[in-house]
Length: 255
Picture 1: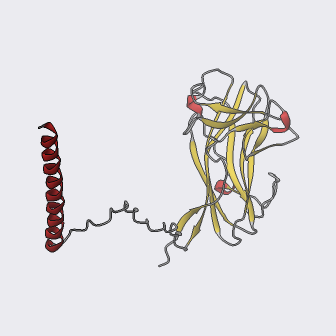
Picture 2: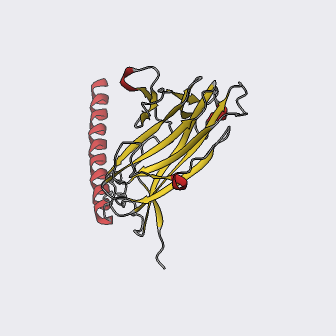
């Protein structure tokens, strides 16, 4: 039986930890890098911001940041998307995301009393229209209501082009004081029967250089030692003779 393994695809900033920016310089469109906002123009545009651990600890699934969008006393249909290039057509791909919403007229952050729905989807052709019929939505299009705690959603489809687009969708149905959506820890992968690539081989370590060696000491032979000794004795005898002659001369001068 053929065994398939998961191979991650290049979805960027899926954990929302690699920065945010103001789209078109608009302060209300504070969106995670590599992601793009979308909203239904027939309803109000929500405000986008990044939820930060420490201020919104309930709204972070992991790490320090999550993407948030919200409306105050208004409804919206909105979300984020990202197009991924360089995929292989005709392979099975999976997209997952962790979602949470808060919908209420009260200020209790742990208790929703409203109506908010969320889902995720993949456009296997790489389109960017969130209303496209090409999008394959999670749970066959049935949205969930992940109130006050993160829930994981997953959707899969077969790619139809060399690119695809992933979507996160949220809809506030009642115009309440708090209609907030949160997204964190998105991941995209495909199933493949190809073995993982072996890591590149490291070049063999070169042996350490040996320190320079002193030239070998030349040991004279016994004959050479004896000859050197005789030469030294001859020089010594000559020196003694010269010294004796000088002593005798000095004595003769003194008489």
